[in-house]
Image 1 (cartoon, rainbow, N blue to C red):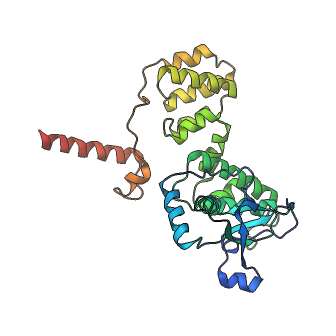
Image 2 (cartoon, one colour):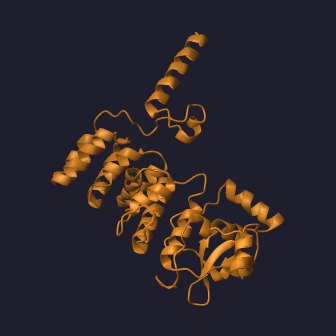
Image 3 (cartoon, helix red, strand yellow):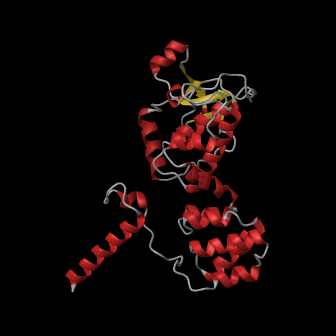
Length: 302
């Protein structure tokens, strides 16, 4: 595999996703590569699912072929590593295609990681676990690159921290980035429940501070009680873990308390609700307006 430092790092998102005109200027061109000579990116954090979107992609590729070339790099062993286009490659295999149009690009590990993450963060639906793993991978790549992002205004020798740079690029706060990265400390069973929206994001972050063995005890207690923790309960568990007092008995007693958050609760995707409300409305204000509308609707039925 290509080692770090062998190429100059790409400078921006525009540098990564070049146009056909740019490719002609740099001598880059699209070639057909056998799909069985391309393997997925190491520790690829994004899931490739056999869902309705995939079936539509397969149908489109059968009829029109792959319209947007994938981006790959030589792996040093006569084959290629996928950088951007995992779903297109998988859909091509399902569609019975033996080759796929590709741009072969030499790049170092950090540049490849950043490109892989950036190309996938454009997707409409991203699971919390995917975002958590992707943010962590890109932050580590940015740390390795260690480059300044504003040479005209920063003092000599100053650099944005990796989380601040990632926050700047994603439009999120550095704290939000850090909290997503914290989710990587959850055991797989709990992280799956976050993806399934059975554990809310904020309690999940607090639970991530518990030791793995404590998280396993918590998962078992939660399954037994058929409830999920409130934020305050998760904070108590975090504190007890840090103080060394987080026992199985304590976890069970907390999860046996009357919960406001049963597993069969009704959950709305905020992205779905957002289109019905002003852009800067808080979750609490949104909840109050929904309750008011339900009160009005109930009164009209009566």
